[in-house]
Length: 532
Image 1 (spheres, one colour):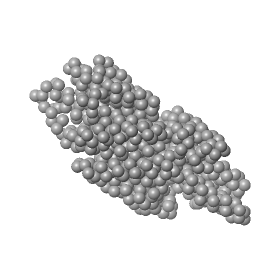
Image 2 (cartoon, one colour):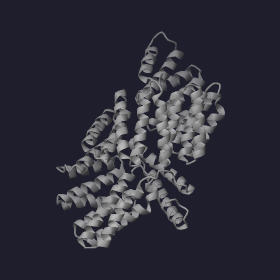
Image 3 (cartoon, helix red, strand yellow):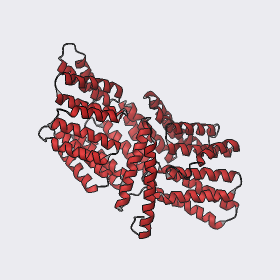
């Protein structure tokens, strides 16, 4: 019931837990159930309190097996709260005196935490240790869940055959057990993993099939809506804008009806982005404003500037310029403080351009000069934005030769790094920077009467299509592994940013991996081995 109807489960568990006549054993289990329900309702703080009391109660009752199960649930909650070291320590503590299926379940939860942290080797080892301890007679549902997680993990590692093998096992076992929701979820998760692995065609095929499964399951409306939101995200990344916008709106309507503010806020931000990309500017603004309300309600302040930036971009596209430069600069500062670095670079460049259009060169120079300092450091998309800032500054001062050099360097940065850009969540920013660089170059060519250069800039703008993701993952195994590493570290950066605990170390790893991808792509292109 916790999975199917967490609000109802919470009510029943609460009634039992607060009954003065129940035994300590029953109260312990009721608190465990109430904690799980609170987790599903995204009350993580309340879930931690309930599960901590239940865990200590099970230990006092001399029930190590129950304590280990509760600890497994509590560890995930602690991880969601951003304390991964505490979560792993708790599992280590609970492991003593535990064996059999209870130990297998604990191994699965530990592996899941390593999986979320991007430590795929540790996760793989942990999942197999879980399977070695679980018995199909006692805990087949957990076995199905482990196979489903292995399917996702192998898809991230670009091990397609193994990914399919484990997912099929998960679906067959779940179907045999009557766990239709788990079977549909396994197929959907595999599809999303294929999307992250760069195989968008296979991803969309699997996700659509999963949605058809969800449609046949009673009480699965919210699960279906979240699956649709994920598929809309993939469609948006594939630049299928009309389809993405339509599906994102459909998912948002259903999720909003369910009352889950966390999922609704994320779906609303996706809908705002899809509407913006599709050119429906007023609808994008409406969704962005609602997203801000929900993020405020749920205390997710680091995410607020992302919604504000959508509003600013919509106003810029609609030429609503009054006070827009100041707003863009303010949003850039907020994005930078929250460590949304790529969005912050885009907002700075936008603010600088708007100041230049108003003839306020001093303010434009302040904003653009700060952005321009990132020309030689950071991810490729951010460096392209920095070259754009430099080009705009030189163009404004009449230094057309220097502006032309900045345009050339910015475009070269994008095209030299297009394999890495194809793996990142924020390649739309890179494409936008490339288009603006080409526009600056075209203006310079017209001003200096250089027809060949003008044609070259037009071709550069057309060439931005190469920065879109492929429909299928690359055949080059080395490139596929590097892109898998890049996806993991990029997701780690975004997760850390959203939790308010960003670190510079993953940023350094991302830059290193991007450099390896660029060098490998150059060598492979010379040898004729890489897929273009």
